[in-house]
Length: 297
Image (cartoon, rainbow, N blue to C red; front, side, top):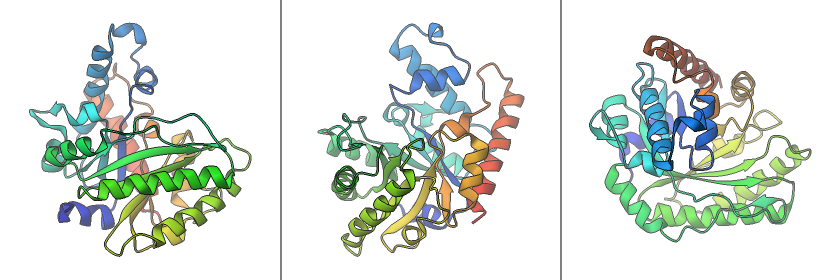
């Protein structure tokens, strides 16, 4: 069973969920934006040391607390590491009041019918067992929709919910993330299809099953309002999806009940070269802006 204090915070807490889950493919870009070029590390191990140092610096910033950040999504290797002498999940919850989640997908399959489902996850049960032992509350998994194609969207949602039920069996709360690419010409049509498909899948869940949804900020404000209020949905969060932080915050503020789960938009403006004072001032301002947009609705 999920930790009830954590579940209450996720359902009703004011604030947003920080996405600190850059994986192998996106880590070099995240480090580059942080001012660490690829010639600064000589191996994958060193690269992961550096991204963990960035995440730990964010998590230890004075403003990174449960007062404004209600949750954080971690990469598997981050879960396995420590911050201030504690496991990352324990540090986040016990020291910062932030609910820990784990990214569990292994990346995307090739596009088919305008969509990319997730690659197989044969070790998911073992990973969920490790997550529970580490004090993780929930999980996150990402698929991508690149066109308003009913077959592709159905495949994404079918897979997401099948895996979500597997995760629920471990007492974890899954975040289902069917990202709609922000640059596609038929984005609004894809969002109409996605809303209908998600609604059918949610309606089919058992009464005692709850999931979270992580969705691209829609073209029409409050497009997902019925999902925000659905009895099987613990919370709806939004990804920044490539929008600059100002635009992401502006769009987010127009969607009542939806809170942020930003990754790149959270780390925008941070640099490894900043002094601790400058770093902490920058992240505090960013957290404040994302918090304000998250509670605006």
